[in-house]
Length: 301
Image 1 (cartoon, rainbow, N blue to C red):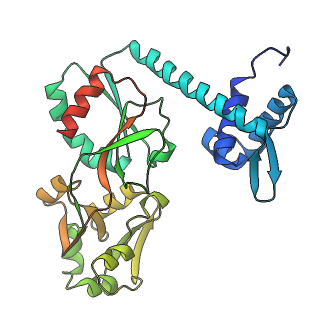
Image 2: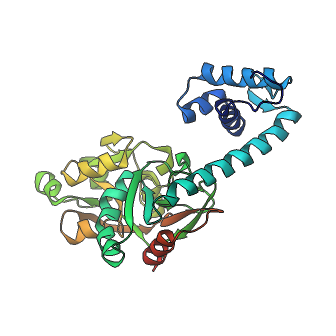
Image 3: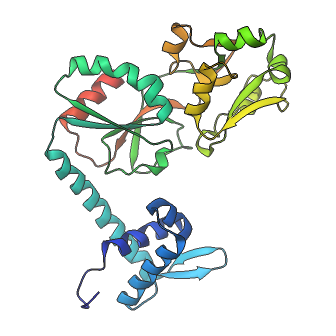
């Protein structure tokens, strides 16, 4: 930074904004694909340029100084406006393009089956799909609309509004007919726990629905299952379920086509209402383009 009136580098400002938001250099580095030490160097460079500290280092983490608090609010607002305007200008080159984001599971099992109807109704709109597992990691400047499961007041990605696509949906235990042919029918919930393989997703975003919570909601006796197949990807577990490797919890509206075609069957008759709703996520304070309006009307209708 050669002169005192020069603006700091954008990399320093992004590192500062992320570190202030997370209260951690490590988490900021994870978001920006940088090491913790690289983020620390960017912050030090910014503090040297400003001539004052922005953070207080405590044993339990980082805290913003009063100057850092004020600077954070300014930098966050300016970066948000810069991202939004950059995205808007990029899209002006192709006003008929619609970028949708969703989890890999929703995109492959549900969205890909629904899009042909939308494209027939709007053949002039070009669709682009991004898959991101965790909506909290979404960059609001990179997409127009998102489709995710949303749990009100518990899983609320910042900067987004959520509109339910399905007003009501149930969660049931499902498996493939291949699995039942190999292992026999499932007599009851205890038989499921004692003799069959339960598919378990190890993902904090899906912790609002687990096998144990499903059993508790049905007021059934719970015990750790004898056999599990675990993965940190729900899409991987769903593919394994379709291949006959076990029983998983599934959302009946999301999997309606797979159930209707006989690729999946109900392993047990039990079901509970889903706490989460398949929802359309719309970035707040974003100008809605014509493709965005058309898709919102179609998917929410």
